[in-house]
Amino acid sequence: MRKELKYIIWAHIILILYLAYLSFDLITLLYDDSFSDALLEVELNPVNDIIDKPQLIPKIIHQTYKTNDIPEIWKAGQQACIDLHKQDYQYMLWTDDTARKFIQEHYPWFLKTWDSYPYPIQRADAIRYFVLDHHGGIYIDLDDGCQRKLDALLTVPAFVRKTLPTGISNDVMGAVPSHPFFKKVIEDLQKYQRNWLVPYITIMFSTGPLFLSVMWKQYKRWGVPEAGKVRILMPEDYKGNKYSFFSIAPGSSWHMHDAKFVKGLANHLVLAVIGGFLIAAVVFLIEYLFYLWVTSSSFKKLLNKITNIFVQFTRLIKLDQAYNFIMSYFSSSSSSKSYTQLPGDEESQQQPPKKKNKILNLLNYNKSVKRRSRKDSNLPIEFNILEKIADDDTTIVDNSTIPSPIGTTAPVANPSPEQIIINDANNGRNSSVDTLVSVNGSGSSSGDDEAEIYVMRKNDHIV
Image (cartoon, rainbow, N blue to C red; front, side, top):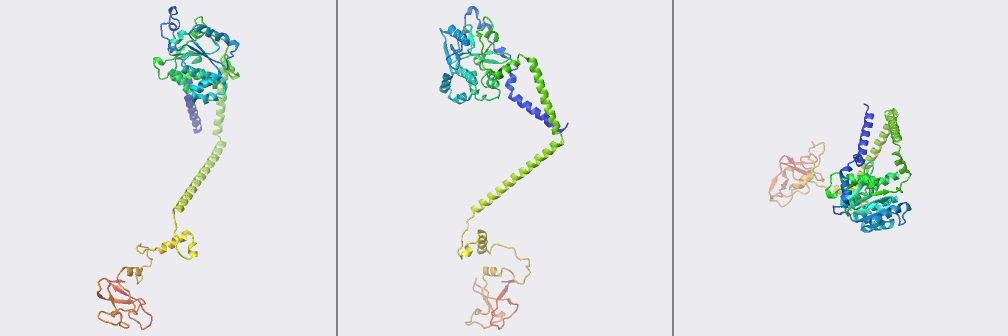
């Protein structure tokens, strides 16, 4: 197998795993486990209509619309809910203005997200979650008219209705105040606020039924206590039967053309499947053409050009980094040095710092520091003789200033080398000179007026 094909296969595997990770919650919706939490018929239709369980959900009915002017098509269903429960239920209609004031007062942290929603239906979806969390009660869409009293639904901590083919819907919901499921829902609204380009998908996955279904799957994934369970109202109890709770009027006023297209696919499944296979065939054809191009010589030439450009670019970066490092080093070293200006003429003071430094080194000559001697070290006279004489207590004399021998009062004129006596400064004793050697090579003093310097050989060393 060619390495290019291996790379393409691995790229597909990584892409599939990443997409599976992103859509994991949607994949879990393929498994319908709503029946385990379904509201039973004995709970909804007790014998003799006597409810023997305590009421948990407050007797409040919530509905939403843009204003107080309800369309005629929904007024009958709205009035039916009010008439059936006017004796002991509180009815609350949330408009756009009252809903925003409620969010601003009780959930100010969400107000920015509330105002940023591009579609009004998103705010209509969000407000129902917040009012159930704050007040509790039952939320009902305006296109859902009440067919019977809702008292049997008040005996559970929370309920939602099942939708087809899978998941739950947000058109009818009920809960006690501060139920943990709706707490999770309102806390995750900000995280799921994304634009998916298609309005229908954006609405469904940010605030709508698909979002609520994902929240439900996540909520029950690791198990919940009995008091925190969300019970499911099944379709036959929701509508379509004489014992159902609701009768449905035409709704979905927020649907756009894309929603009609998506929902129309369900009515033409055969065409949808054929279209899916055609799209897959086009994708595979594009990938095959891409594979042929990758294995061609033109791709290799292009790859070599890109590689060379990358190498040159990295070299430039490294050179730039090295240049910056050198400049920073010299700038830091030059800033840390301080120069002392020595007194002298203007010419020496105007010398650059480097020359000044050399002058200082010469002036501060330290004779104690050992330095490398010349290569020619076989000279008859030892080097650094003046330094050694300065360290020793021996005195150098010449024939112009010969000290008087002990016991004499006058200097001896033109003495011979054997007559020169050197005074030892350490103990004041006279020490005879073994041999005096003239620097110019003569062994005795000459009669010239020019003085000669002698050195003494002491302990086999010329001093």
